[in-house]
Length: 83
Ligand SMILES: [Zn+2]
Image (cartoon, rainbow, N blue to C red):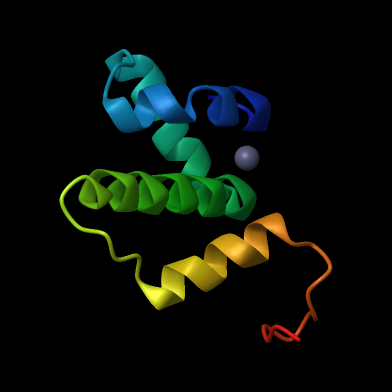
């Protein structure tokens, strides 16, 4: 089974479907049991979707934007609000 560092390292290839079946299954199994990696995976998958949509559409969903801000700004209040 993949560990956290391997999962995070392979995340982009995983999203691209470039991994072998064995590795893909290992990462799947890891994501089911590891909330940290699952959140990282969710974030990457969503970010990737937005980037793809941005090619034809200039809008970023407000909810996603605030999630991105939360991910990159550690000094926000812990209660989910900004400011
Ligand atoms: Zn993990």
